Image: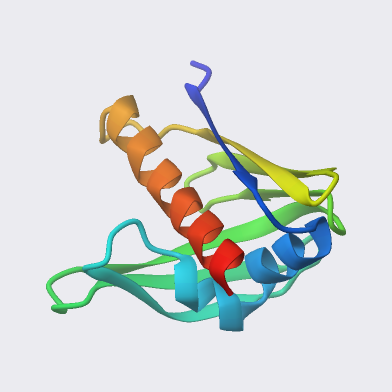
Length: 138
């Protein structure tokens, strides 16, 4: 059975070069990669090449829960697109489309089967919105 695909988007008021750097550099990833203020991303690693590994530690600030989000890159088109596969086989593609001094980010990912699609969409969109806020204000 084909997995359900979920798409999220945000238009970021920043040039594509800044958006790419903030999306891919671990020093920035740790500042925006969480959905709510009671979570954090204390550590990130990013080997930005096909076959390279991405790891981001995501955890509740109170220490009650946490996990490592991991993936292996399938494609890396510098400044334009990233595609990766998570350990459970689900795939994610993120495109960065420059439009004057803004960048449209579009992520499409395979839904997992344990949580409702609406919950997954809301969580991933919240992280993307956090990225937008961080990038536009730093």
